[in-house]
Length: 86
Image (tube, rainbow, N blue to C red):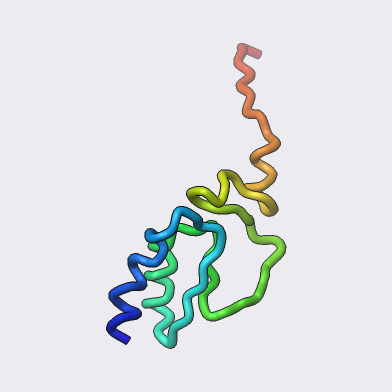
């Protein structure tokens, strides 16, 4: 267990890719803490289930941007300001 704890904070940083990662643990608080430090577009905690509505995309060399969900829609939007006195 010590090896896993020591390495868990480094695994996400040892690669140039970051599309998806998995964290398996009996301690859900620790698993969530580890998941928050991993540099990946998706981190699954204690599951292998796919959620098609969740945004999908990577970090680092795995790409920029997101598909699906509201984050995916934002890529197609152009902000506009309309100013004036009515």
